[in-house]
Amino acid sequence: MSRPLTVVALLVIAALAAAAPLAAAPVNENTVHEVAAQLRCVVCQSLSVADSPSETAHQMKAIIRERLAAGESPEQVKAYFVDKYGLWILLAPPRQGFNLLVWVVPFAGLAAGLVLVLVLARRWSRRAAAAPDLARPDAAMRERIQREMAEREP
Amino acid sequence: MSGRRRVLRWAIPLAVVPVLVLLAYGFRTDPREIPSPLLGKPASPFALTTFDGKAISLASLRGQVVVVNFWASWCIPACYDEAPSLERAWQAYRDRGVVLIGVNIQDKDEPARRFLTQFGHTFPNAPDPSGRVSVDYGVYGVPETFFIDRKGQVRFKQVGSVTDEIMKQHVEKLLKEPA
Image (cartoon, rainbow over all chains, first blue to last red):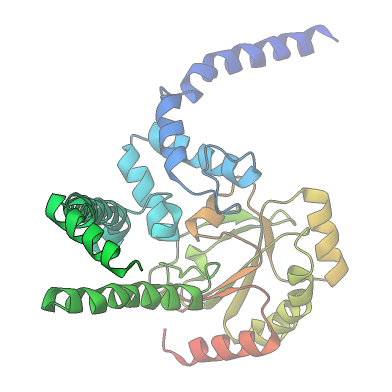
């Protein structure tokens, strides 16, 4: 390598080194991951952007990072994706409107099931407690049974 | 039988009805058919550099009907099926105030260029290496084609291959509208 080229190369390296901290703006990678984990990777449907190794997910992560670096809040970044893809892009449906059903019905079903079991269990135990009185004959009844059986015998 | 018993006897089978209604609704919808929230909204501006090195931006095309087609060379067979229709539409409408733009996404340079050569595409085609344009348009698969009216609003989104009929139908409709 000739000397002028070396000098140029060194200058370029120095400039890159100086620019690097600027390029890597203080974006918290945890925040990037947090947002990415809530977004659906658009080419793989059931994976989050954070979990998918696809190129699309990689690009989406870059967009998340870029928007956070530009000063947007995680909520604003999510709103951007919802704006473009609809609520489908969110892995968890927001807790409002019709979507509330998804959040409420499982717990309501569980509660209703528990109540049903409690009611039935109580009814069954009451019946079980009442049943022995009928089944077990008292002394007078036992005596009558024996007498009647004796009468029938030849 | 007590009155309460009789109510219970009906209530339990009746409780199944809403579940059946929900299932009937759910199984009739196509989970892959995701409505685009972009219809009727202003199309996101973009500026790209075509494979020929020319700059192209949506802003400069205001007043014209713009068709944006997202494609990839690995998208077999859908992108290959629709390619001839795209070129035919371009030839038919290029002099009537219609611009067709191909945006190549999730692809590599060499196979993308081979695709363009194979079909002899003459309309502007540009790569979107960062994926920014495809996210701006809510693209989740290829091919997807957006029809933008003269006012710059997204009016129709075709998921999957376009045909001559689809191109004609939407382009003609948008051409009839005043600028």
